[in-house]
Amino acid sequence: MVTSDMLRHLEQRRPDLNRQRFYAVAVEQDLFGDWRVLRRWGRIGTHGRGLGEVFATRGAAEEAALHLIRTKTRRGYEPARQGA
Image (cartoon, rainbow, N blue to C red; front, side, top):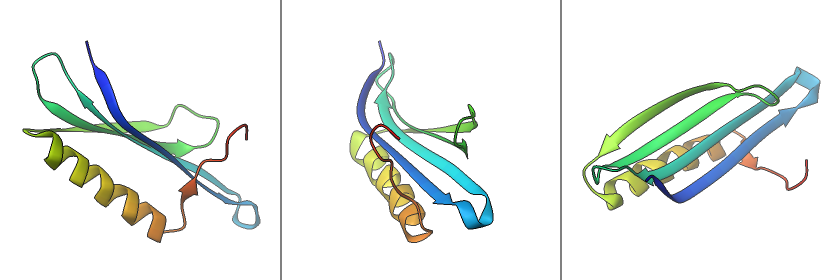
């Protein structure tokens, strides 16, 4: 069973540039005890693309996820609006 311990969904909406993007980051533990950072990105309304990385510890995975979130926030992404 995979457990999700951290999930963040960010969006960047720039109608003037026809830019409607999302970026999602999740930290999960798999059946073997490894910690994974899963990220998915793409245009809002699509499935997008994804990538996963494996880490030995929860702390290392959370640190990597927070780094990704900070980077995207600096690039104009914001927390997704509820119900939008």
